[in-house]
Length: 472
Image 1 (cartoon, rainbow, N blue to C red):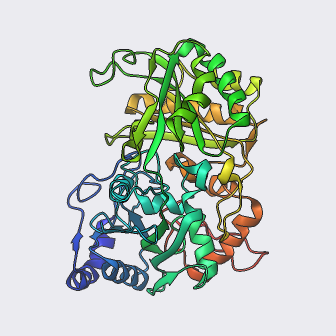
Image 2 (cartoon, rainbow, N blue to C red):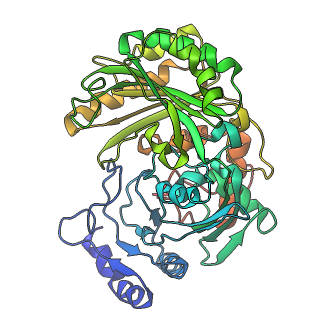
Image 3 (cartoon, helix red, strand yellow):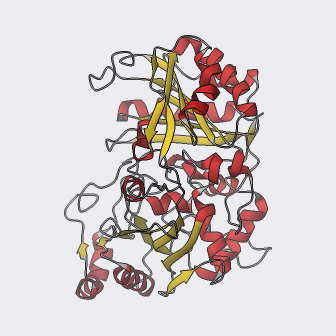
């Protein structure tokens, strides 16, 4: 933030610090932030200040202060879902809000805003239950859910947003609200799928499911077999029960001693399996894939649900990650050839295709803003990049997405939407036109000044004839 602006707010910062239970951090010198933070560091920011919130009271205090001083608000927990720089914003850091309460009789969990999925999985597993978590245990549960949330149990039970019972949140008017299907139902609809556009969610209550064990893991095939593997997997997905969730990742693995010898410094087609059923039935269902050709490594086995993160084995180290995504209506042979041409030597380090359908395609009991439920597959490219590699990776990712135009549905896949997909056009294309219009009207009702705009922003539209107001 420019020095003159910091000077204007100096008195306000003193007042804010006195009223917080948590702490207030201010940038110093040339440091872009009070300290490096977050998993994906693709976006560098110069915020006005960072509030380390200890609870909902601090969040409400911070939001009211920001509204009074016309300072935009950014929210972060784990830092996986960064969108745009938080320059000049008041960042509300929720990482200290780490409460989890499991009710095994009601099969629910109350999760505060800073909790990562790994913690919820462990707490629920003690009762033989599982949440609709993501593949990576370090992803924040609340932020993931507000973007839809597609994980290892998706085809069994739907998107994470479909199974939210209630949300505690602070809206831009400084009110603390508890929203549900019966209380503020319009806000309940839009927040589940509309991401962080309508308020700062401080906690949520979600359903848990009796899933003590999974049959899951990976089949790793030589990368040169990727077209063959993808065709066989595509055909296999056409007649699966809802209990089977799967994907294929085309990955160039590093030469890392922490990896099994069969994976080191190799390009592989990694078929990821998560079957919500018995090991015997899972083995029967997976048998056709094992016959495609001999895998170089087969880790598919029965496991406790608490070990579900082993299936994808997503990166755990913070860094600069470049990510692009979309949805595909179908996956014919031409689509497979088009996608595989971007993988392997000289191509993108990682491309993943996930199978949708099942419960993901059905409307939930209480409607929400999660779009494009009829899509057949997702396409995602994520890569940790060095500065000298970033331009080429971005170029290849853009070409990959453009090349899938004949099969593509809409824009970015909402659950995976990243910093390279934050333009107004890209955010709008992540939704069906009617859903986006309704979200823009809802934004006008709850955040007419677009206080919450340091995100994948839905700008407020008051009437059907208005155009969204772009905010700097």
